[in-house]
Image 1 (tube, rainbow, N blue to C red):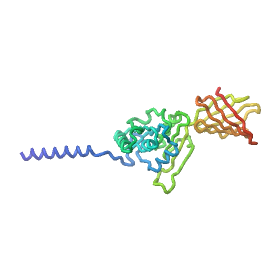
Image 2: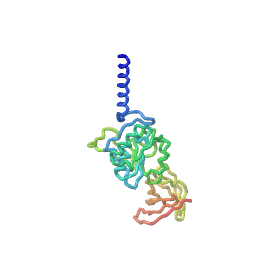
Image 3: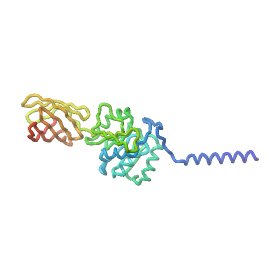
Image 4: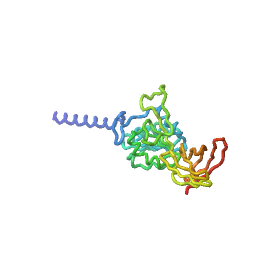
Length: 273
């Protein structure tokens, strides 16, 4: 009889201990392994700088791949943006939802359990990320296919061959001790091809936001130099003239101004052939 009672006591105690363990809230640990990336949280100063650099407003839809505890999306929601974090770890997803609720932004900050490589990001206007270079490189084609003018902000790690449009290093006075550089890319329009331009043609090639090519007009063939896109905005020089223009929403027109070396400015327009 005593043995039975002792056994029951041990069983009940074990069940109580298991229940207590099950009820203990999940607490992530910096450096813990994930499916595709180790989780290391960006400090608040870096998160705020990324939001600032990405010019996040209430007009944006912000996405984070490998969103961890949801801090990037919660920060975006506090600025009025809608946000969605994609995270493979279900415990992290549950934690993110709880933290968003506690921050009072659960209506704007959503989180899903999903593979970040498979999720559709096409509706994002801002990507806010802290991923390794290998992750960034694999995702680069999807980033490049976002709508022109979309912004990608990242903590420290970049994309091979695609130079950021801006880099900002947090000052020593910040709480950031490592991984303290915020990077910004503005997704460029795609303008490679041949364009009708006044009494001639312009042929362009493009690698990410960098553009080069030639203009063939009455004065012969002239190279397009220092060509660069920032979203829909294009600038380049050719034969001593500085061209600035805006790519149309349909990607088939460019309109702007051309400023000659003597300061004379004229309008110019190009149409995609």
